[in-house]
Length: 284
Image (cartoon, rainbow, N blue to C red; front, side, top):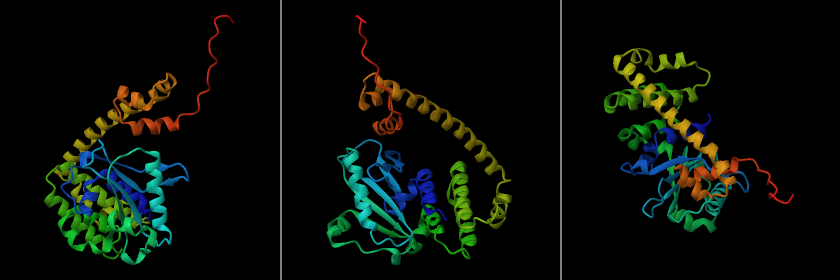
């Protein structure tokens, strides 16, 4: 199962799940954006990063790593990635590393030289020990579903779907959560078709209800609006190369286009090298 992918999808679509996991469910999720940045020196890639939308001393950066296999040098690599990130990106703020383990036995003890960092900057979460929190928060229940045994998965997933129908008043959010639960089950049973998964979770009848159909239509309309916004962003990013060529720096381009500096920097790195034109000589 591609656990990195499923966790990226979980946190990308429902960032509130992450803050429930770390015991901060009241965090204003609109203050953060979730990304998976690449670090160039050794092509490291962080599993995930919750970055404040606007830099503030009150809002820390959260580095997120999902670890489902034992790796002897895991913490050495993690701290290398974090400090290379800070070398490349200029942030003056607090930070914490959140490591999500399948179970406690997978963790390899950190070397002594990282003791202070482990005590003050790292928090470990063990998915098989979240039963109590999963009862309280549906998001944590979905995360725990990722590591549930195949034998128990259908029953647990059906219970989560029923919990979503009871507790989520917004029909669109309810639909999205149910589809996310279905996606997790699809990852756990890759040999089953979507129709077989629907039958396993008793979703066929649910999707025929008026409430679900209305939510589906509302979701489509939201998707159309999101598509329009994405189109606007892509059009702005196409301007980055031109503005760089005109001599504007990253900060000036970000201000002119109305987008954040990191998005501009990422777009600039993807631009091919532009050959320098010879200076114009009026006497030639």
